[in-house]
Length: 144
Length: 144
Image (tube, rainbow over all chains, first blue to last red; front, top):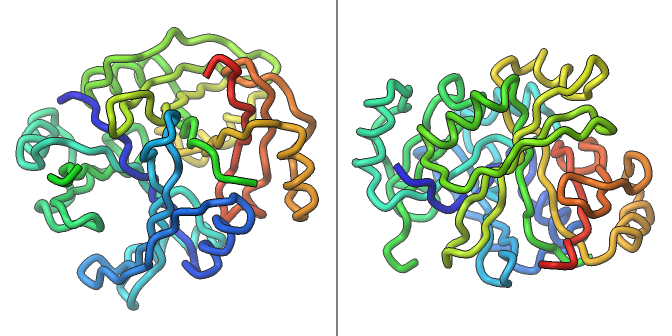
């Protein structure tokens, strides 16, 4: 595969409202999207935009807060109560091609492709095979 | 302050050569810079470019490997032997203005500004004040 854009860095937080205040008031973010729930994945999500070098769309921060008792984020926050960097998400042109490529390389793909926070198909690859980084692979939205 | 570009995500690794092979052969990176030592900070460094959405310069991956016995990365790798996400680095136009702003907000700035991996002044802010994310603040290089 060919390395695509780093769509976002997932940052776990115990409180999206508090993190929104942090990115707005401390870091000076101006483009903060509306939070929304992703019940199937057990997370509440909020995207914060960063500018690219040329002023266009840069890598986003994806704030993720636990949603429900079974959220996979509870374990992370137990180990990191203030939150912290959780995963990195790269774009690919075709999710099924990417999945086949990762599997052919012996990488542990976690489950079948499913709809992610940007409305396109995504999957995760286990950090043990990815230099310790939980890695999300996401199909680039067709509208850009 | 106003949120600047996410210059890079720092990723700790026990071996830059192995990580270079990973980003090249598994992730398909084509722009991998020459590694170099930063003895004053106790790290060996290697930048991997990712493309921005519009094809320009995106957020970089900064691979960091311990250099010397006193490297601050040894502790991270003891807790995360395969490596993992270590810090996030945002650009600012003026490092001294940024330091004064963070301090005025009660954030724990770690030491005085010093020359970072891109040749401009940087400082780190303690993760306890930054939503659990060790945050590097870097003055934008004057050549872009």
